[in-house]
Image (cartoon, rainbow, N blue to C red; front, side, top):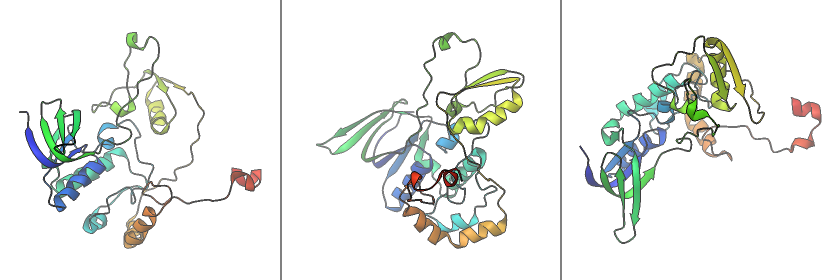
Length: 267
């Protein structure tokens, strides 16, 4: 049934940011509600289920820092976690802090209007819901709208069309198929090797040459995790001070490319 209510804060999106915002708002004593287009929590990791999907930020850093018990108890299996493992982690967080009850799933915001005189937001959804909110938090991420290639004749293509960020929850059967992959960004770099193992033939269409570096991924043993967890306060503080605001620690090199010789540049 459509909902109509007034809240302190309305959060759009149930990914990493949206879940934390709901938790944080509760801690501040705010009446908070959330809406999410998907049928579950996870955001990026709910939608992106393509073969080989994993994070390119180290697992021990790509995690919440607001609760010390949560930081210490969760055990990651790999240096760079796969999509299923990250989704399990987010679902664990949602259950541990009882965050799902604040969200209306399968619901997409259609309009958001600010009234200066109220002053409040009026937000409507495709489910017929209407909210009035003091604060509207768009935790929708920067990669939430897939881009379909404008290829002439695509609308009459008789084969199956898949998009990495709309990958079916039921894994499509690519065994013995002729597959074309458009693009060589991160999603392609991760998925192409696995698709190649299944397909009878694979063609990759690349507009602009790119580069990839070895991930040096490996399983995480208990001693390695314990060493990081023992230094979490120091490591988190260091990450927050990085000039590149990724939330993770990235080595900084201030030298110009051409201050060194060609051999050193290659190294």
